Amino acid sequence: MQRGVLRHLHFYREGSMKTLEEYLGEYAEGWTKGNLPLIFGALAPDYVLDDPNTETGKVPKEAFPGYFKAFKERVGSRNPFMRIDNVVTSKNDRGELVAWCWWSIGGNGTTIEGSGFITVGKEGVLSERIAYYTKLPS
Image (spheres, rainbow, N blue to C red):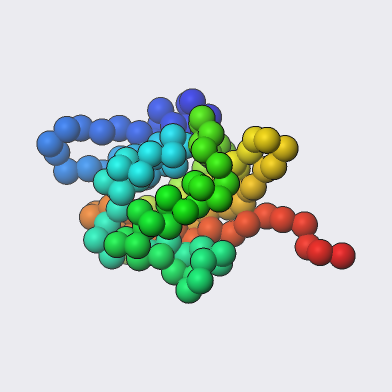
């Protein structure tokens, strides 16, 4: 994530109720650093990750630590782990913060990239739906 974007998204006040933007910033920072506790701390109780490359396509909060560990093993650990760019945010009809972004994980001659659609509510990040950008087979 670009330094300015990360600074804009991440505001954490110890011991206080977090804003929607703070949850999103913590979640994004966790992904850029590959830091599971940071990501997990931003998740709402009913969080679900929608990843088409998983067995069921859906990863609930309680299964996220195992998913994240396997994902990092599959793509390799890097520093920074993920780059997040082109973040666009808006509020939906329910007052939730929605964010769209472009993400990439690169290194060792391999780049994996795609987009994410994230929804944040008053209890934290509710969901993320990711799409992978790849060339179709000929």
